[in-house]
Image 1 (cartoon, rainbow, N blue to C red):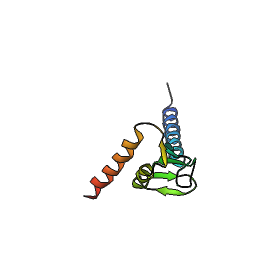
Image 2 (cartoon, one colour):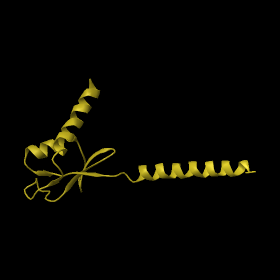
Image 3 (cartoon, helix red, strand yellow):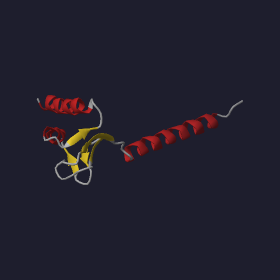
Length: 101
């Protein structure tokens, strides 16, 4: 007959493992490449714009808004990481306006 302590120990260790996995995922936010400044890009050639769970980050500068990213695009300063990225950033601006109303 199996000991009930074995079940509880297994359950406890599983819960501890899950908690550690969640903590690690929050401690190391994944970043998605959004765009890169081109050679004529506002004095920031080669710097990357990424997105993490808190918003946009311009390499060696800090946080920027979605509107900032689109203004860099309007100036012809950035090259998008992929074809759908511009629409995705535009969609984020639309979502933030819908929360404000």
